[in-house]
Amino acid sequence: MGEQHPPMLQFLGATDTVTGSRYLVRSQGHQVLVDCGLFQGYKLLRDRNRIPFHVTPADIDAVVLTHAHLDHSGYIPALVRDGFHGPVYATAGTAELCTLLLPDSGYLQEEEARYADRKASSTHHPPKPLYTAEDAVRSLNNFKTRDFDRPFPLPGGIEASFLPAGHILGAAQVHLRLAGRTIHFTGDLGRARDPLMYPPRGLEPVDVLVTESTYGNRAHPAGDPETELGEIITRVAKRHGVILIAAFAVGRAETVLLHISRLLAKQAIPSVPVYLNSPMAIDASDMYQRHREEHRLKPHEFEAMYKVAKPVRSPDESKLLNLRGGPMIIISASGMLTGGRILHHLTAYGPDRRNAIILSGYQAGGTRGASLAAGEKHLRIYGQDVNIEAEVIQMEGLSAHADSDELIQWMKAAPQAPAMTYITHGEPDASDALRARIKRQLGWRVRVPEHMETISLDKPL
Image 1 (spheres, rainbow, N blue to C red):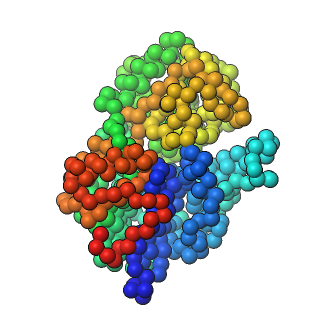
Image 2 (image 1 turned 180 degrees about the horizontal axis):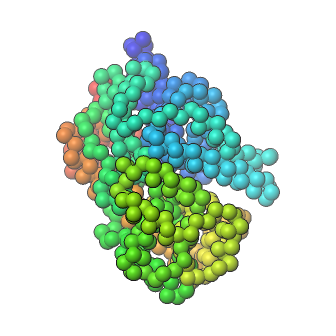
Image 3 (image 1 turned 90 degrees about the vertical axis):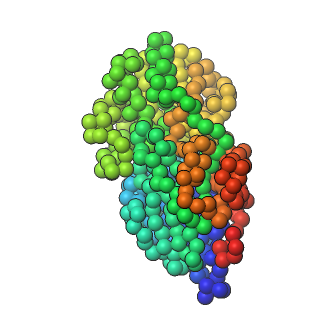
């Protein structure tokens, strides 16, 4: 049977973009999907979410998730709705975060469809969401948790292991053994000196390495992000401005709160009101508390971090913030300005030059965040053009992704070179830059695969 069905690896996503992480592994007639993410950013990429999945969902035996961010997990509700009935394996932290992220994703898509219907702005009549919140809640029944460092079997004679990746709560590297080969997926690698998460586990000997390259063409700023954040807050507060911090609800919001609590404890910034306007980030705090073994925070630091901000849950409370004015700090999602409550705050405070907008990390091409970072002064928000006069700062030092130097250092520490390394999950220039560095500095065999490319695993690599 193995001869009839040679083991294969196919790149279904994240090959010409930093989103849509999807890798299909075939072994002994079985199919396992590593990650099942949404394409985000440019419309050309988002349209891929609407294309029927390249493999019949009912024919997929299992999904293995690296972590909960939507570009890695966000297509699962559609996969389950369309016939996938197998298990979705994840760490406990990832499974818990998905109970927040996936239903919220479905709800936002329903909201977008309703808005498009009201404005008659869709070519579909009526416009339909990719999936609903109800679809997302149903898909959670497929989740099965597995511990770090405890191998578990998959169909097709595959053995899988989760290894710590840093990055966010529950994030894992996925290590597969099949047909005498080892395949290692980095997922999103965290940073060695991340203030919140522990560093990623080192790379062990593998045959095939599939690595992310989000920051493959650049290094994070050398300065201390906490100091930079303090300088921005102080500067804007002195002119009675509002500091809008666009932060991913899971991971980045916690890091920002940690920095602000430390700055306040040192009296390094003025004492101004801080609002955490993200119900998801508020709920995620309980999950971080339950999994203290994964992050660096001591109990007193955790308590201080969440005391610093007033949680904002209801839409009415959120709307009232737009009438308050500065000085104040609002931390809200989404981190790339693709949706969520931050858009209402941008509409209210973006036109005033006293205010500041902080983009807390990477901004994928085609998002409002990327447009702002590139100097755009007008954003289309809910059908209106919003003039942006506020100061815009992109703080890449707040990123939870390893940069180019950190990726190279992580690979350099491996006891031996993989037989082949594939560069994925990056914009084309970032992926190619990392490819060139790996070849030049490490001497490894490396390439950037094409979208939908299939690699045979039973031939010399």
